[in-house]
Length: 421
Ligand code: SAH
Ligand code: SF4
Image (tube, rainbow, N blue to C red; front, side):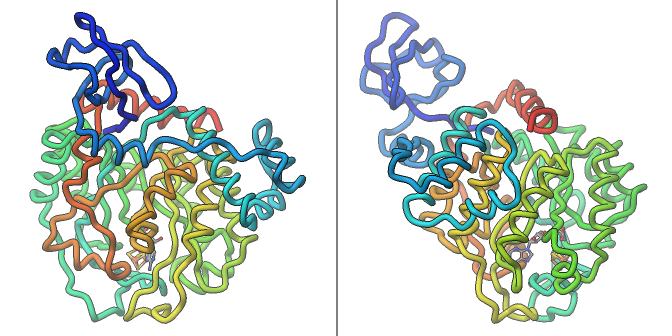
């Protein structure tokens, strides 16, 4: 599903209308909305008006999508300006990424604007809305940062039945218009290869959707079977590119993590990956490496977000990752990988539930991930506490492209990222 910037109708003539979209006038076909009149706000795509929208809702969407003008370069630090200009013509190097990640004040603001302008230039004005279903919170691992770790006895564990997962997924696609769903769980071997294959096949037989699996470590054969059953992508973070840090926070082997990513790619999956921002002991140099690692892996979607402490874990008393550095990571990622999909993650919205989403969009993100997990389970999917969950959002309501064309467009865009970086 996608969302575009609304426009206001200036005048109508037959099936055509002239519409003002924040900085330009456009001729739009209004044959699908025949009672449209001057003053109305509408959403349109490829010059075809799709939906009328209240002024108040239009304002809210514009607040999220309309960019601010760039900051006058003459006011900025000369090395910063040089790096920004270089970013337009070549890939930045590690020390340049660190420089940008350390920017403050006017330079930081200019970094956000540059990223937003880059997003606009490369992937235009619309954002995509994806869904996530968290179907089990059982986990055999003991990651020090995560509330689902096996030693955490403070949470109530749940597993959804395969048929319930299928029904929810199908309803999210056929009923609401989602085109990409992430099916996520702890590393829960209760769901055998055959059960997962069955689940994917059932969903794919009833609706047209990209399924991204986020189930952690499984062997090559399992991922191969899931791919053959119709899964399109895998969401699997490497968490940190610093081997030593990884061994301190995770109980899995670092090189195995990358071996997994390699064979997942070889199997033809789209990949969503990235790191946790603000792990205890992590440096800005590590974060720059994380971005270079994402680029090196040619991932199609970056999944990265701030660490949020969770009671009942060894890191329960550590400070949260910073919102500021998370936003700068989004911007620098956008400059390094112009067409990549960058969803605003829940952890960021949890740390700043009022402004997190808007700030992330302003920093160059281009997708949102809505939580579709049934409420009775959602509160127990406690990788960290008090997660930001929004139901029946305005954005979900107005997201467009519910037709099949949007599936093909999404596929094209996912492919573009791997080919053009
Ligand atoms: N078990 C699977 C998928 C579920 S966890 C896996 O680990 O891949 C999904 C992501 O949640 C992890 O990759 C991790 O980066 C993130 N996560 C876990 N605990 C977190 C915390 N306390 N704060 C922020 N993100 C966290
Ligand atoms: Fe399990 Fe994933 Fe949490 Fe690690 S991050 S404990 S693998 S759910």
